[in-house]
Length: 322
Ligand SMILES: O=C(O)CCC(=O)C(=O)O
Ligand SMILES: [Fe+2]
Picture 1: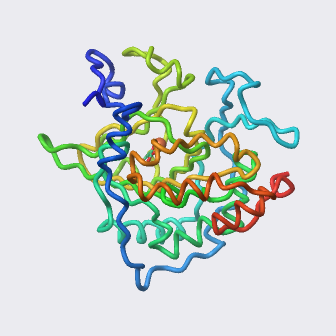
Picture 2 (picture 1 turned 120 degrees about the vertical axis):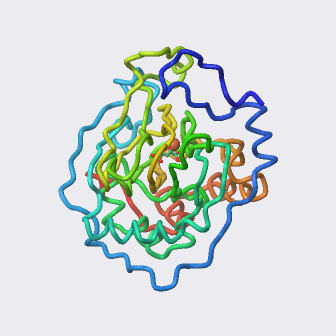
């Protein structure tokens, strides 16, 4: 199957395979198994709003610096939806981070293998953990994320991809390594929280292409647009406009790396949502994707209110971001 492009002679990050598109993506959808669902975790730590760090500020890069023109971007209430990348920042306090790490470690038994994007992951982690559910639907957490990006954000109403935990284990030479293929997300607004630091593993570098997605095919070894995000600290949290930026994670060759990837949705930009049915189905299979797709595409009257209801989220409006 042509999921891997020959990239001989290219740098190690560029040598990573790329996620299937077109007909290969449909094949993935037909073969994909529905996500596993573990029973809820008894006795997990309790989420508290105080776990959200206050006064966050991080370096912000705009999509124009990736080569996008302003007229290609969304606009609402006089604001341009042009945030490409923010951070890394520390969105959780040390106590919050250690509780989240405990929860994600305990969910590892529910992880399923996939050849689509991330090799070992738990989908819909918020349906298995009250901690994660309450965290991503906490108004303080949502307002913090919204203000970092500059648009109102709620958890993505698709539900299955909304909270994903990726697991990487260095298994030594010869074993198939855990990676994330070069891909762009179906999602527009994506936060990745690192639950380990470089002291815990080797490899596992978060790489991205600082250019337009339609320029990625032209990248060659040594291309200065292939960058590594500075995600080496435990708790480092990176925002990426996932659908407009190619990114990947290099193989973990030793130790353990775990990340929580949370996908958000701007109810006011619902029409511009970048997800496609086949991208979602490539991960979760067709039957599991249909109800999610309806929840996203069913018409709404009041965007902020109706999507908050579908996402099981508090309402976040433009007023809240100001
Ligand atoms: O695990 C990471 O650091 C990134 C994962 C990612 O890009 C994804 O799951 O879409
Ligand atoms: Fe991604």
